[in-house]
Length: 198
Image 1 (tube, helix red, strand yellow):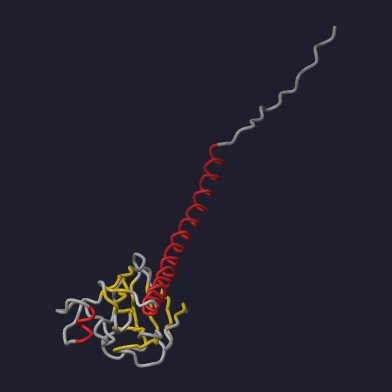
Image 2 (cartoon, one colour; image 1 turned 135 degrees about the horizontal axis):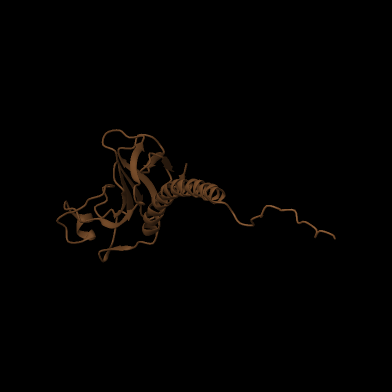
């Protein structure tokens, strides 16, 4: 009599993952995702700074174009052209109509129109528009600055010639923008009113 053939016991193989393997994979994915989101946040702050620099350039171009086009301000033409005010510590840029032709921004006044301000001693409210910089971005420096760090860049009619005042000492102005994380970016405006990011 013959014995039936014996089966050799093989250990059962599993085609699934163990708990340790799953935990390792989840940990690796979490580390990669964390690194990605940290870089994404840094990129957002850097983009906010770059967008703010472009907003500054846009404000300069808006003032130049408004001067060349003789745009109306409060129903009358601004005899002194248009300008841009930069002030240290602010998170906005002011585009103004230079009604009384003094080359400076006047927030208020007693004149009833731009024409009255141009012909008399009274000022007229010269605010044309306010351009807000991105959240967390401020003007942190105006170079070269002598005295209070306020810079009025004015384009005079009819040729839109650039005039800096009152505190600019050199031929070029450097407007330094600072983000909430301390990163900085400068906008250079030359004596012709041409601006670029540096």
